[in-house]
Image 1 (cartoon, rainbow, N blue to C red):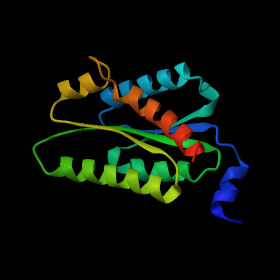
Image 2 (tube, rainbow, N blue to C red):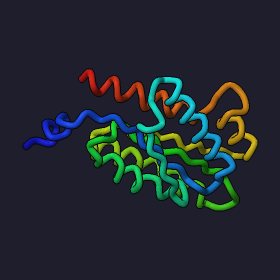
Image 3 (cartoon, one colour):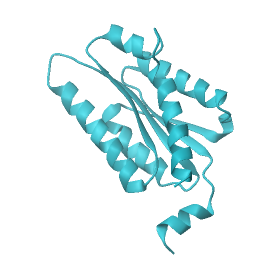
Length: 153
């Protein structure tokens, strides 16, 4: 049976959220905004599954495991990488982005990159709820929009 036909048998209803524990003082804020937005958009708590991973670098493998589940409509990957004094920032941020993109393309499902990369803690606070933008909310909105778009193709 073709992969597309096999996936169409089970109507996905679960939104998976994988969250990095590193910089949890920010990632918890991203998660809270994401969950609130999913709820506002009619996704019940019973249809959301959250799992924590050690850091942003580990997000792609957890996202892939979720994306392979037929019941999962989309995966939202949340993390926070704040620049330090070494090249580590680039390695983590670049590989998290590339890994999440690869999972989305390989599994043919929306896997949303909700990892914020900032120069300072203050910027991270601003992008996780302090101010006009909230990347956790935006990640939830992107997941819902992509599920709708892909369902229509």
